[in-house]
Image (cartoon, rainbow, N blue to C red; front, top):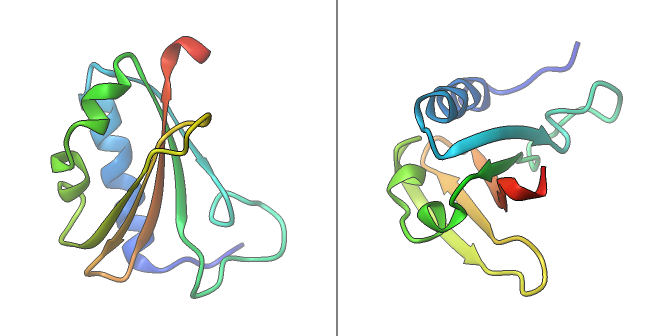
Length: 108
């Protein structure tokens, strides 16, 4: 079984709780090294990769309050990714790093 840091485990629970409680959210998907069931295992440079599928993605893009709800943010980069889906890269004071990709639920 792969090992993960406590901050990532707790953050994952917070993210799932957020998506359950938000009517705008249609689906959340975890991808990347923490979601992988096979080697290589996540390392100290790994981040949590989260895809949000929202009914109204603009709500997530217009505010960072929801990102701050997961913990004290050291830095958050807003990447619009022309031609792709926007991403919010967050580094938390706990040391956890999360890439939030935001998709329109109509893609489902």
